[in-house]
Image (cartoon, rainbow, N blue to C red; front, side):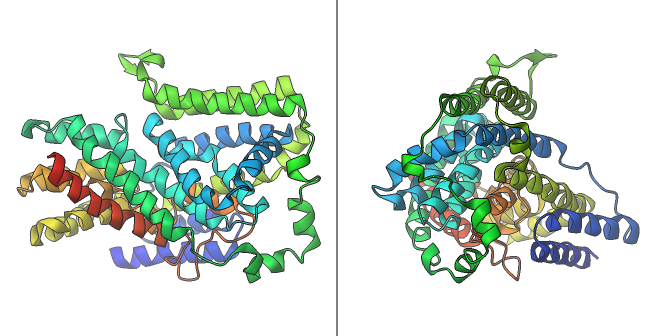
Length: 437
């Protein structure tokens, strides 16, 4: 029954991807209807916090775009990139990696995805390259963040065996940095250049597309207003504040002895930044909701609403079966623990939940801490099925169509970058585990 229901989920993703626009989200609703009414599966809670985080960030980014701030950021980046534009495939993941390490959540990547997409397109760089690596880096950086739930849980489970936070990070930080950097080398040559991409060249023949995505003036020589620059300052201040709040929980309000969660923190900060941009920079209210950033963000919210909820409902109904399958895999050979972590993370879309389920099992089966830590990066299997928030958002932000879900779902723009990063990081993980542990 699980396989049949899993096939239904995949079919809904495939049809939704073909429809385009809000197709992913509404087809997720169709899948939920089939699972709930047809198979009597109880729906889990929809991913409200993820949706609201995206909405808050998009509100601020859309206000900044309407104020001219996005053009200013593109202008600055263009001047740097035109000296050697190929480096954006390396710079973009470095930025999202650092943001995630400091904030403890990969959702901070939302704030830079539209900039990466636009800078790439304006400079003739295939956006799928930096976008895919930026999203992958924002996932992998979780295991290198001292404040991420997955890392905290890992340390708690291994502490009785003498493992400290420093031990874990001494392996995960260098292995993920080197693994992602090496993957960038390969991804930087992935796919055709925009000038040679037939799909993009067909888009350029459409006057409506050209008008919607055209730069009104030459970006590099465009006159930028003071309010545009101020909107960028406010937006970047908001992003920096999110990172600081993530790195230093003591700065957040505390309720019942616990710091306010990062989801609420991100939502409050970015909504406030959006308000400041609207009040101080006074962009046209209609332009805010008509801009490309707002449209892409809202499409991403609808998509996440349907698809993420659909996947979570399926896994919630079959969690015990999934655990049994993974348990048998681990008992077969210790090194397959990486496959177990990867498989479960694909199904549950949570590094923390994957650690909570499988690390105690690994300890029970007698796996040495070195193996568990070396394979820790394998909890980042989100990219395998393209239903993760930043993946969907980056697809929508890329107006060239180079970042996409393929005809067979699994041949999407994030598969090769993700697998390369995973393989290289695992290899380096075992190397550094042998050195430091």
